[in-house]
Image (cartoon, rainbow, N blue to C red; front, side, top):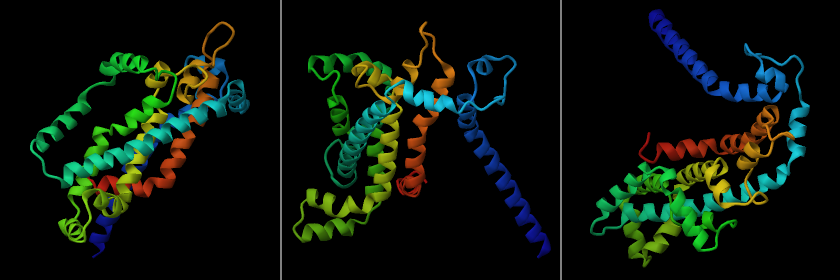
Length: 279
């Protein structure tokens, strides 16, 4: 009995050691970003590396916030991210429901094409995307994100398809007997029960859009651009040289909303990933 307890404690010790090490590995870059935001420009450029600031430059965060219209850019990012996340979550759920519960000729082929489209790099479609939106007069508007949201996302469609495919067929058959069509079945039965995948999908889509640099830089003007673009392009001195300590401080504030959203919704996110065939 004693030997068994010793082995169990040893396994737990090894497990906790691995988990703590992995946590430190993932948190290391964010910790270094915070320290960079508290240094002077000379300390950031020092060689060898100056690990800790001699005096914590807390004013860097205030300077980064006040030097640009931080709240205005954050508002633009929030509008675009919420708009896209809500629309793409609903449209992906609808497409995933169709692939999971409806029968049609060529469904498996279409689903394979859908999954194959995930391998298409964004840079390949960059120029055609810009030309299409320019012809439609949608440059410097939020309409591109509306159309992207309505067109669904392959990875999110896969998540919903896996979740809906695992739901009992009896629910669907009982609803049909009661006179419900597939639209009512989706909105009244399947969608309300898919909150874990809805949560995971929303977080993924919100994070994608909040962190996107290429599309806002290409499609939006300076006044309407997002915080991601502003952080990377507007912190410069009189000579046009980037100010790295302000960029680091602004990057910390830029990341905080994503961390808060994940901390609040992490239970639903984990549940959504584990109930969608990815456990």
